[in-house]
Every structure is written in structure tokens, then in C-alpha cells.
Image (cartoon, rainbow, N blue to C red; front, side, top):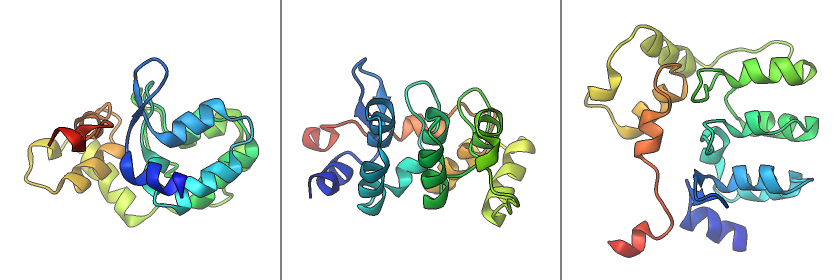
Length: 164
């Protein structure tokens, strides 16, 4: 019940010990030595969006762990291997360096991911288009040049709902 409430109350961002915005999933990966069960609780209680969010250094959850079992778990839950961090490196690139044996033998990209990369690589100015925020956010997930501009503009801090 507590995890469900945390995911609902702060679905995108909490502040880490340095005051930097991060997700609950990033906090768990950074501070829990065997996070598997807690990751499952977070994801199964509405935290799926956290699988592809960036942390304070611009890395995705898959780029913040070296534990084989955790990498495999996050991939199974649907983390995007083609998501880029704020330096333009994909999750696939990172895993290929540190744990290439965990990469699926045959990766088939989703059509939506291919489309998003096509928009990003084609330098189409999607940020200024009249698109739903979730579409802009999805494209920025695959855009090596965005440095998570869209995602950072949609961050919701704890207490934002109280101010309204």
C-alpha cells in the first residue's frame, strides 16, 4: 500500500539527497543492494513510466545499475533499450559495454520507436509542433540532441499539487 501511494503521489520525481530531481526507481537502484522485489512493487503499482525516466545525471534506470538480475528485470518490464541519456548514449550502448551477455539475442524495435528516432534524426522541430505532451516526451526519449528538454519541463515535484 505504501509503494502504491508513493507512486501515485510522486509518479515522476522525488528529490535525492543532493536535492536533484530523480525518480523513486532511481533512488531504489542507488541505495538498495538487492532491489529486485522493490522494483517489482514499484512497477506493478503504477510505476511503469519510471522505467524510461532520467535521473539527476541524465541516465535511465538501466544505465544506473550493473547488477545482471536487475538489468534483466528492467528489460523484462519494458525499459527501452534505445532510450538516450542526456549525453546521447542509448541504454543499449551502455549495456553493450558493461553486460553485453544480457542483451536480447535478437532485438526488434517497435514501430513507434523507429518513428520517434526518424523524427529526431531528421531534425524535425517537434518541440514547437502542436503535439500532445506524451508524444513530445516519447520522441525526446529517442532524441540524442534533446538532452531531455521535454522531460525536464514536465517534471512534477512533491508538493506541486498542494500549491494549486
